[in-house]
Image (cartoon, rainbow, N blue to C red; front, side, top):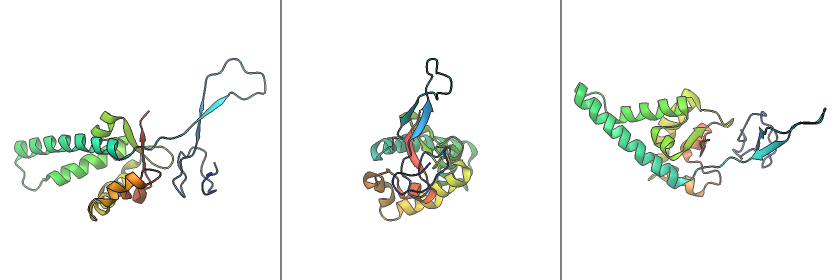
Length: 170
């Protein structure tokens, strides 16, 4: 599938351009009434909807509450000094994003993280997004997170680093 923005050739299953991140239209087969022999069934194009700052912020608040609850329970039950809320937080974001594309907060507000093909990012891409990506997004007074406000594809720096997008979950 050729990108309408930059002309890059992408695999047919891609939902975003691998070169510029532009949203590629996908086709969804619609059940159609009887089709004449030799004719193709009708397809409908749908555009991907990128999720902006405030809905992502709402998901982050829910995730923060979950992480603080789990961290406090874990620390009080096990009395392990070496385990910190930072490790629990990293593990939470990494596993949920890598395996499901959604943390509990994202599930609650109906959004998810996807790669260029529109699939769950996987553990490697999620690790890249959640560790160095979010550290770099945080360092200059959270500018990497605020970047979502101005970016046409609503990507924060952590999304750009890992080639991910946050879209409405279907």
